[in-house]
Length: 367
Image (cartoon, rainbow, N blue to C red; front, side, top):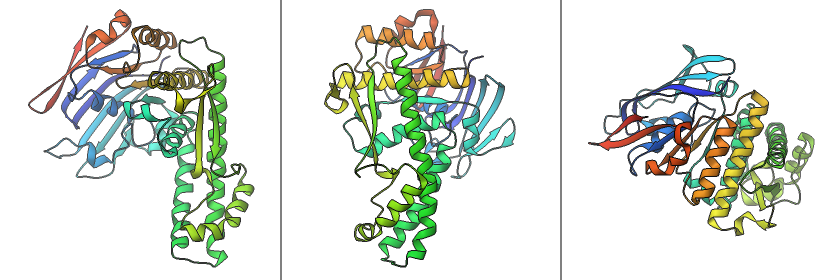
């Protein structure tokens, strides 16, 4: 049984005043002019996984303007375990609310039902931007394997914010720090373990696949000499670093200082030094490897969201990407400006034409 959306309904979401899309498990090719609302459509699909979606937007920011009436996203999600009705909504600027099969549920519950991976144009600079973007990319991959990753990250960040407040206030009593450092050590050890395990899974998935996309050698690194891996080691490192942290006004050691280093394996060239096309190909390779590994874990490939995926890909590599997606059996939602970008998919995909009229996005299914 595959993992896919069979129905997606939007109301006052971004540029979509009203849209209803019915699809099957095949890839979904979405085309239309820039600004028509293609990315808004796949952003709605990204909500079917834990987290804030591919734009990391707050719920009020997703409401259609100028009405600002609140929004709803409804979906029928087919999973290996059965069909589920998922309801997202935000009313009057409230936080996003989730219902699964008619019952209120936390965001984290989505991780037990579905997996959604995405690649968007802002990620094209992953290898040359600051480490925060690479940590976020790595954590999304870790979350796809380990649904508890988000809870560990929230616990770590909450304790770190409280500890940083003490540091900025120049509080020196060690008793104030001990409990917070214990919480940071507990959550931080889970984060580091999950990140390392995710990198191992990706390496295995890349090594065991014949693909047209280059493999990347990945390593978890840090500004420190080494990353404290165990709870006890991290607690000791935080205690030892208190005086340095007091001077800086923030924590200088821990998983929030980690970075992801990538190397184009066949060439031995750091990803940051590769061409724009090579960097894009490496990213696609990692997304595909992540999908292959997840398919082994959950018995079905994840839903893929590939925004403007053809950018920086020549026609041969674009055709190879489509072949790999179809071989994987994933429902991939892909956007592009023109229908010709998806010609190589032929009857293997279904097509949606998105246009804009009077400030409103319109979605038409094309056969």
